[in-house]
Image 1 (cartoon, helix red, strand yellow):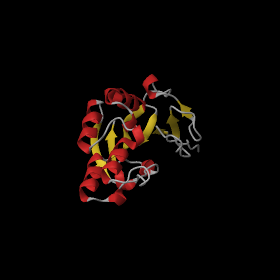
Image 2 (image 1 turned 45 degrees about the vertical axis):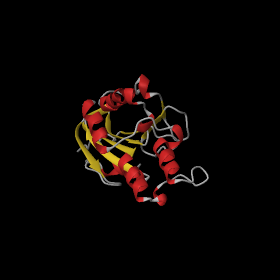
Image 3 (image 1 turned 90 degrees about the horizontal axis):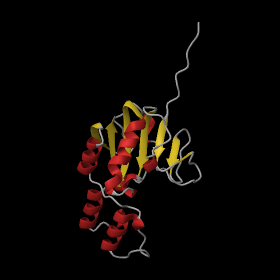
Image 4 (image 1 turned 45 degrees about the horizontal axis):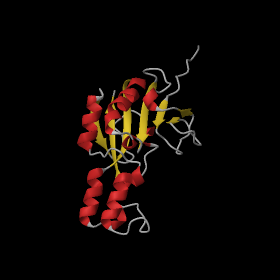
Length: 185
């Protein structure tokens, strides 16, 4: 009697920076430690269509200018298998504004030597020292994902998934300031 081996799950960590994770296809445009797929998504990912079981992007999409987000999301959708999930972690604009309005200095990750005022901390955190080009709320993220052809867009919590892959949350970080969104191809 022969048993056939299950094909390995292929999972993409797009825009990982220096935070590549073992067991993932870690992709970034910079050749950094842990990155095993160096490419610019604007030129297309060198992956076959419908070849990825699920994908995550942790705080990378905000670095894309609004005019290019649809192209990026469509490219991520292209490589996902039908029914596969894309999990996005995005700086949560609403949560940051609420912390500012409450006067919650501890919410912000900006040290006093970079900005001593609450408004300065809010501004630097939203712009993340000039890296952030697009800000997100849940409804805006859902709008962009639907426009790119994703379905069943849902808000999730830190380390919580609606997908069939519990390990999709392995890359989650920055719980207190992050909006987690999952969308199905």
